[in-house]
Amino acid sequence: AGELSAAMRRLAQRPTDLEALLRAGNASLALRDPGAAAGFFARAAAVAPGDARVLLGQARVALEQRRPVEALDIFARAERAGARAQD
Image (cartoon, rainbow, N blue to C red; front, side, top):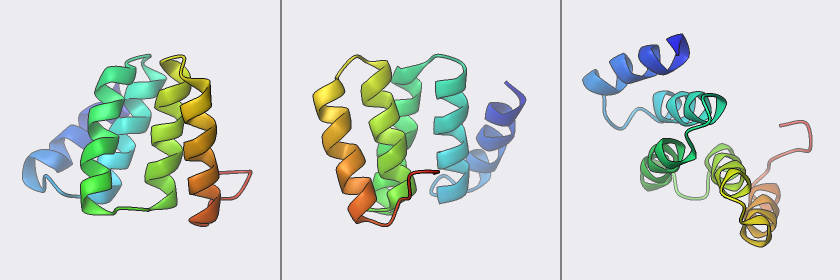
């Protein structure tokens, strides 16, 4: 919850801060809130379309929402965008 709070404070000052959007999305996933995470990653995608970190977050959301086929497709796009297996 602390990571999400810190990210939200940054977003209050800079709503398009990519790092804060990624942190908020990842923190939301850690808190088992894929709906909120999806919103943060969608905002991040608007800021940085095709960013591998954004795509990885979106793929993780798809997995949490039990959409494995979509998750695999997004993971493949993230890999093409430069994501590595350890990311």
